[in-house]
Length: 212
Length: 274
Image (cartoon, rainbow over all chains, first blue to last red; front, side):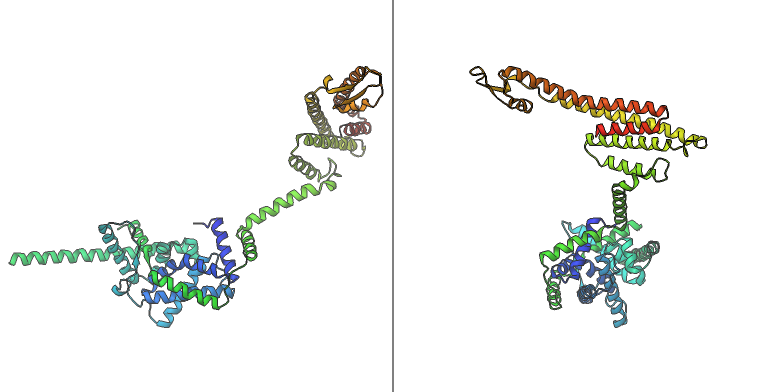
């Protein structure tokens, strides 16, 4: 997905405004990107509170980087934000010493799920799917999880992912393919286990009925 | 489960959002922190400068390269004219002269001006060919092929000159035909019968020129003015024809290998058209 000239112009405009310490530009950047960045951090580290703190820190870091004219090599503002987010998460891992602090399906830390005009059955199915994926994502290798989040949840292009992760597009494509296969295997394994468990339970229930 | 099913499920995770209250409170918090570190609202001028510079920054490098190339091409074609005008048909830079002339022709939008320019260029080319062929150091047995080619070029140039003159004269005739004929009732004759010292007031410029003449009969003056108008139209028509004749003479002189005279004749024809 190539960036169209208008988007490129807007990016340059906002970046120049940020360099000139324009607070309106900063707020615009925050409003446009906060949900994506928060989602990226949340799916990477797994805890809502930690995601909140890190997201806040990422925006402040971005402001400071732009003012100090560091990280100018990022071609787009979005790539710059993700680059900062990635570095902030690495720093966070170093400080805490563990990788995923909380499970993504933590009952107390459930995030809002937007739903527009969905019927209860659809919502139930979708929630089940989400819970399944969310439970399997932390089990993936860090590298695989990151690329899946960037491509399918944050909706970044291959070019942007390559820029953020410092790899070439070919490598990203291969990595993406492997990540998807790994996740599919985990999901299928889970589905298989559940089916077997259900069959076993049904069998046990049948035996009890027979005894009675 | 296929990969596309999995991707669809993953895409659903885009709907996971942070708490709205946190979003708003964090926004306020960040704004206050940023304001403390020197953030401000920009002036209109500053915003305008940023917008202009962003336009330039967002243009891709190939676009700049293309722009510079076109600029150099145009500037080179337009401003190298005097330098290239000195090149002759047997020079290596002659092709550059032709390109420069083509650019000039294509950037001229008035058809009359373009025709005149074409006449000028073609007659200059023909003159240059005459000059080269009049040089015995060039026009000899060794250069037979090139001389033959130049002869052909001369004929082509003369043909072009004639065609363009034809067009110019056709346009001139069309313009003169469209000019309204002077009407008798546009001439006002005041008191011509009383004392024989009539005063004429006319809207026709040709007639007003004759109005100062004190003649007893205004009617004769009317007739004179019509004649004058007719004569002036004829003069306009004659000039291209005269040029045509001179070019024919130049062609004849060229064919009889009197190149110097042919060149002079071409110059004469161009002076008439100019």
